[in-house]
Image (cartoon, rainbow, N blue to C red; front, side):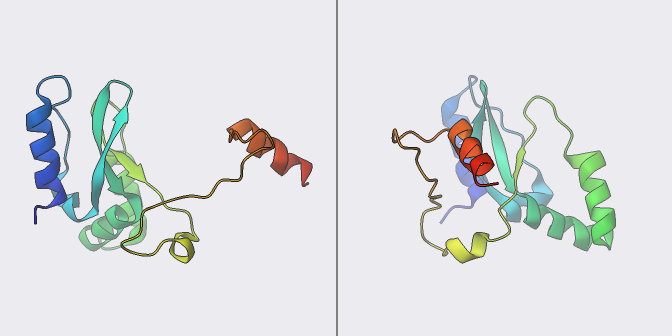
Length: 125
């Protein structure tokens, strides 16, 4: 079985120049989830909590890890990775091995929109 890094590197090689450059951070290989499209570029996606755990071990404290992440890792720019943050109740709904599906209620017309969800939340207040 190939690691996520190996699969992404193979994808980048096949994609060629159009989408072939993907920034991967060696020290975060254990937190690598996959890739995503951002505009016209393909970027790596890392699990935020796992990245912070890795940095906490390296930095000695969670506070230092968060500082290091904000000032040295999470700087925007071309090709920079995304860091996925899972909802606090993620484990209640996700079971390992099952697809990651989020059930979002639909509005009466059967179309889910951010505006419809916001309106619904505001009416419940």
